[in-house]
Image 1 (cartoon, rainbow, N blue to C red):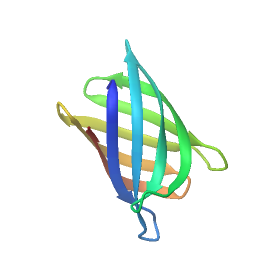
Image 2 (cartoon, helix red, strand yellow):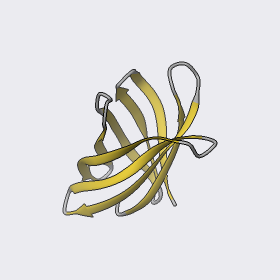
Image 3 (cartoon, helix red, strand yellow):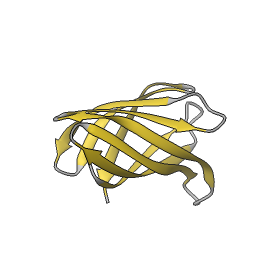
Length: 101
């Protein structure tokens, strides 16, 4: 999981945005930071990330100031792709795929 990751997804209202993460993995623990951005590059919020990776499963909590936590749960779909869903902070089982950059 160590490295830079990008997901493109949409809000429940249909607004597209990116989640950009810089992650470090030690044993099964995953930590990092990132941003939530509109597709025009405007940063909505910075996030801190904590979670676990037990291949192929990835579970991450993204915490942004002023928002409820976002929970991503997914599985590796290749060496550089994790497919899953976002829940929390207004998201309900929203399909989201992270790709290593």
